[in-house]
Image (cartoon, rainbow, N blue to C red):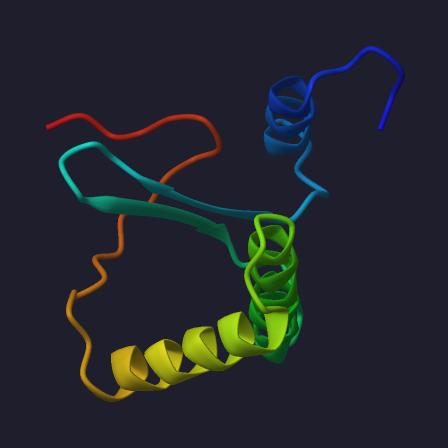
Length: 104
């Protein structure tokens, strides 16, 4: 990361760079989860690697708060499997040009 650039600014810079991968999930205060995905891998399996990396990052983040990273990882994988088998949400596809959300 560039010296003096905040994480937020770095993310905004990447969102404006069409060569960057865009994958962002945000939970709003009302509980809705918004996900932005730019399908930039030639092989969709690349997103599988991304999800696996995210599991490791989440386990490490919780470990920094005193949790056992092995248990966190196991919990994440169990929940992921359940959600894949019995989704609690139906993803909706919305065509979005970078940075522009359709109105209406």
